[in-house]
Length: 142
Image (cartoon, rainbow, N blue to C red; front, side, top):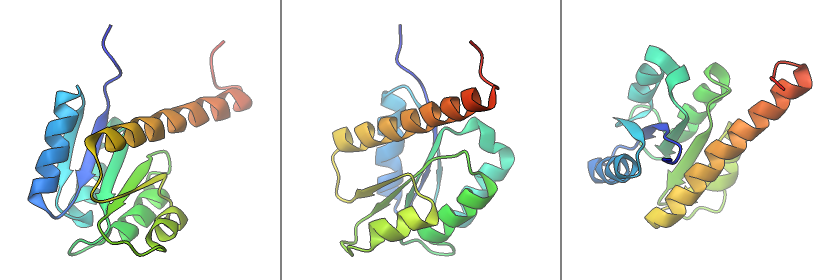
């Protein structure tokens, strides 16, 4: 049996990062869509947000930065978990991301192993939490 397959939106203004993450996710059996900034990401999400399992976004980007994107996603798509990645070591970056609504934070440079672990953990935690809420509301099955 194959492992779970996810559909992930990668948002980063640096083409090499987008290509690296997209390639890794595809090799891992996941589907990936890429955007170069927050405006493009929101355009992709507006097409069909329910088909995405997660968003991974950089912080510093032109047009709309990652923190603004996280805030928009939190408001428009509250059931979509977001991982924020940044190359800046500002100790407040993680707290800003979490306060904006991010589910996970990772500092560049990171290993593919760490990225994979954090992404899978974030998606699974989100799905588990959603199932728990549904059960509490009586929406879940047996």
